[in-house]
Length: 345
Ligand SMILES: Nc1nc2c(ncn2[C@@H]2O[C@H](COP(=O)(O)OP(=O)(O)OP(=O)(O)O)[C@@H](O)[C@H]2O)c(=O)[nH]1
Ligand SMILES: [Mg+2]
Image (cartoon, rainbow, N blue to C red; front, top):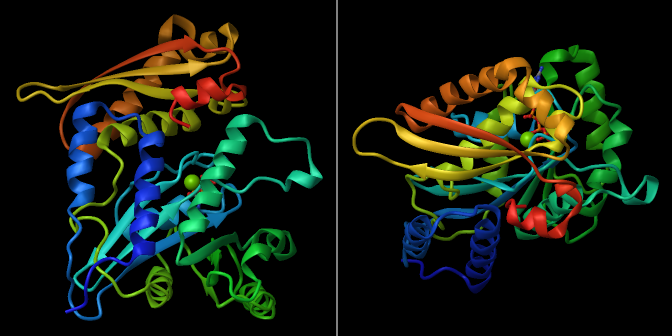
């Protein structure tokens, strides 16, 4: 029977556990449960069992989170039509008897630093999350929107095209919007680029060819035991996803700068044996004027958003909840190291 986790795998996992603690400000009792869970790594595993990390990277809005959800068969990572929805590195666990793929969904990669004004501090933290994910990865899936100019994707792929780099697949997404001729041309274009291990056309939204992505990823994972319990779908606690669902509704229901100047923090998450669970969320904006927009006339905008969020949170946790949202101003939170850290970035 094969033995213990390799030192490299343990180090990677420790790094991820640590950075996840930063991302998710879980209360002590949750942290304790997490500790229990993450230390229960089995010492042996079935012959031929594979496990490892697969980073999902790409430009904003390419469909990274939709792909993760499609492979997992459940809505885990939030998805909206607006760019820069995902801000953290989201772990999604896809396990079967013979493997565990640890997917790392990441924020969309922004413009190259050399060609534009400097990124704000939130953007910088988001890019740090991408770098961390690819550093830990055994394989990288670069999601490319097949409707964009293919040349525009090359700078993003560049770091993985070098010899000895981590294996890279270009996943051409949204092929449901393309003619088959255009698709053939695109596949040829990327296949001609040296250093790309495979080009996989998919529609994450329609669930087309997702098995091909899974099979390619699996073929690049090392043999080893599962790193997380097989029945878990993520390592982030439920309250993290509750906050994400509120953020998703903000992205879906507000326009212009509001989604981008807003963040949420789950203040309290009480599971009750009887009655509804209590969820208290603080929603931070940067100016008083933005607070007015979020709340709306007579509170109508906030009420509509909270109603939509509550329905999705209830579907996610599988029971009724009581959701309380308070709107607060935290000036320039996107530009302050201290605020970003206290807000879980
Ligand atoms: N037509 C079509 N739309 C898709 C497909 N995959 C994703 N989308 C849509 O593209 C938009 C962005 O999807 P996301 O999954 O949030 O994209 P993302 O890459 O995670 O975006 P960020 O988190 O902002 O970087 C959403 O409106 C999706 O419904 C696809 O295969 N076909
Ligand atoms: Mg996303």
